[in-house]
Image (cartoon, rainbow, N blue to C red; front, side):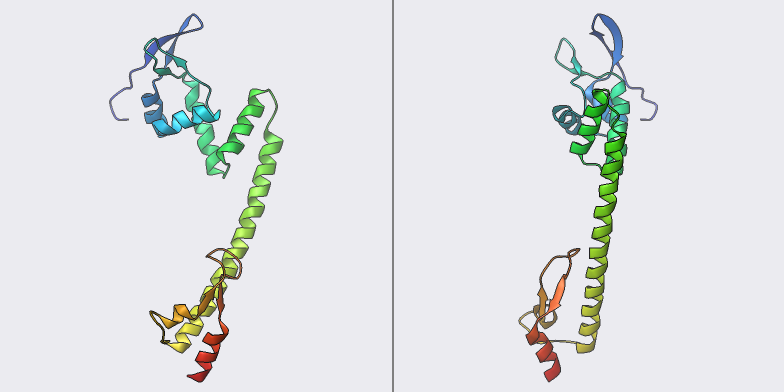
Length: 174
């Protein structure tokens, strides 16, 4: 932000003058893009702000805390829909803490499974490379090593690489 202070506008909110921020100021202070702020508003993550007479959004300074909350929740792996539900529960006066713990519990289980899949894929890839190191070069249209590998699934999925029978036979012949 440097030495340049942001100019805040005055708007009337329910008959009481209070300081508000324009969308560009909110974006600059939070690091969130203007389109992201509009999306958050449409999605129910942010309250609809008041409007100035000329139609500009006039956010209260509380929006800065809300955006910081959204960013923290995203850093913890929460989807925007999950964050919206948590905010809505709090808005209704309900404690969202039980749901938050359950979301994180599920996220940990998902991460554990993905890590297991990645370890399996890594081991298969290492075995494939070790076999290729023994073979050296393999004849093929472009690269026989790749052409002789049967790829069932992409990276991060179980059983990512499988050798075809013809590749194994071809290696025995050499």
